[in-house]
Length: 218
Image 1: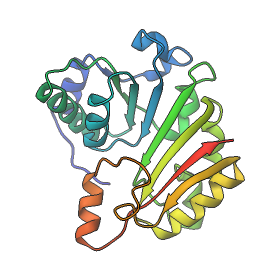
Image 2: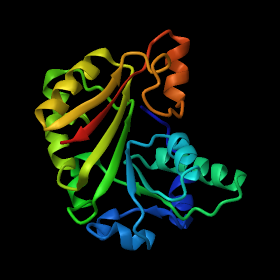
Image 3: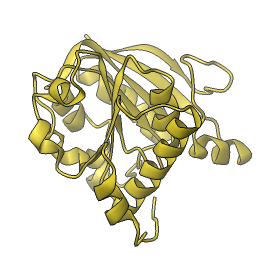
């Protein structure tokens, strides 16, 4: 997703207590950052942050980490997170917003972090053959995730792209994940409690169905 530069983003992010510009300093010690042993869920490519803001503010007994690599997008996420928590009169204590390129995820998470769940919502489908390795669900990436996922950890994946969905099923199975649930129409077959994203609203208006699955590490 292309987004225009937000001049205010850098300063606002620096002032936010829950934003981490260099998350590698917490590799293998994310429980120390949150100062508890609650489960940790990770969202890759958080976009404008509405999904993670709603999810995290409703599940205070779980720690959440949301990442993106675009400063302007992170700035919008920061504002949406603050708005959601303020509306519920909550302190932001179970959520960290980080700048991270998913291709360098092993610089940020290690085997001691034991992440219990990953969310991947409407990621770039990278349709051209030579670019498919950049997919967040590609086998190469899944092997990286396995280095820090807990036993029986799950990946929740949503997309509007038919080809990406079908090929991702193969990626998961080839990487030792079990597809425990899937649907080609999430609105019809609600396989998990869904927080509707801006993408889903847009795609529904275009009569494009959301495909979704849950993959468990075997």
